[in-house]
Image (cartoon, rainbow, N blue to C red; front, top):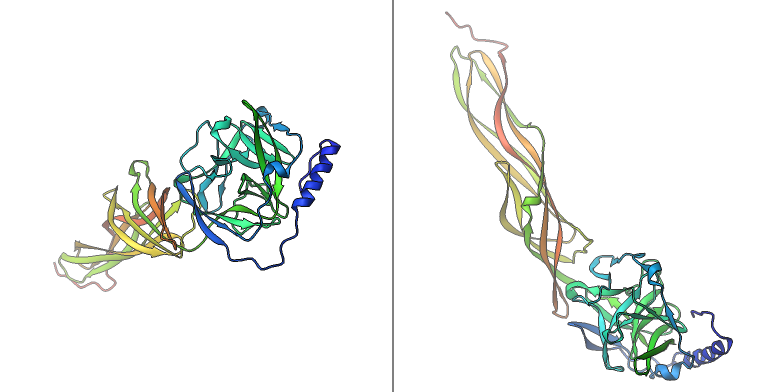
Length: 419
C-alpha cells in the first residue's frame, strides 16, 4: 500500500481503517459477471461488474483524517510529459487540458454524486483522478492519504469513440488484461473507478479514490481513501472484429515522384540477309511487377479480415492519375503486387547484310502520395465504429516506354551482292 509522511495520530487512524476494509475474500464461488451498458458522454462503455460482493463504506465512513490539499506547482510541470497513445490504438490518448473538453473525452456519470466526471492525470506523475467543470479547471487526484489538486493536467480522449473500451471488475489489487495504464513510466498504475467515483488502481494493492467534500459555501476540502473488495478498471476490448478501409483520398498536389534513367526491359535482334534495305514490323513486350503499399501514420492493427477498397495511382504521361477502385482482403500489411504486360509494335528498317538490335526501354517511377481514408470496425455486438486515418502511399511502377535502335553490325556470313 502506498504511504506518505503525515501526523503520527493520523497514521494510526488510517492504518486501523485500512485493516478494517481489507477483509479477506469470501470463500464461496462468485457468480458470473453481470453486463450492463453505461452511457459515458456520447459513448456507451460496457461495464462488467460482479454483483455478489458486499458494498464497501462510503468515503465519509472510510476516512477520518483531516483533509489536506497537495497543490502542484504549475511552473515545474509545464510540458514535462508529452501525451502518449496506447500501442495499436492511436485514437486513445492523453491530451493536455486547455479549458474545454474535446469530443470523445472519457468519463462517467457518477450516480452517487449526481454529476459527470472525466478521467484526468497529472502532468509529471502517474496519478489519476477526476475533472468536473463545476469545481473549476482542476484535476483532483489520488495521493494517499491526501487529496491532490492541479490546474495543469491531461485528460483521456477516445477520438471518434473508436477504441472499444470496457470497465472490468477487479478486487484485492487484481488488474484485468489490456487495462489502460496511466503513464508510460509506470506498469502498475491504471485508470479505475468504483460506485463512488474515478480514481487510481495500483496493481497488487488497492483502488485509491480522491474524495472531495464541499464544507461550506465555496470552500472545498478532501482526502484520498482506498478500496480493495470491489472496483472496476478501464480496459481496451480486444475481441475480434471485422474491418473495412474505404473512401481513400490522395493529396496529389503533395506527391513526390522519383524516376530512374531509361533501362532495357526487352531486346530483339533482326537480321537482313538481303542485298536491299528491309522494313520489318517487330513486337517488343515486357511483363513487370508493380508494387503498391499503404502505410499508416500511426500504428494500426489489422483485423482477422480487413476489406480494402481503393483506387491505385498510376503514372500516365509523367502525371499521376487514380485508377478504377479495387476491393481486396488482407490480414497483414495493406499491399498489392500486380503484373503488368506492355507491348509495343515498331517498324524498323535494316540495312542489307546487317543485323540490328532494338530495345524496349522504360523508366522506373517511385511515388509517395499522402492519403486519408475512413476505417470502420464492426464488433461481435454489432456496433460499428468509424474514424479517419492518414498515411502515405508508396508505389513502384515502370512507365514511359520507348523503342530505340541499340546498334547495327555486319553479318558474319553476308550475302554476295553484285554492283
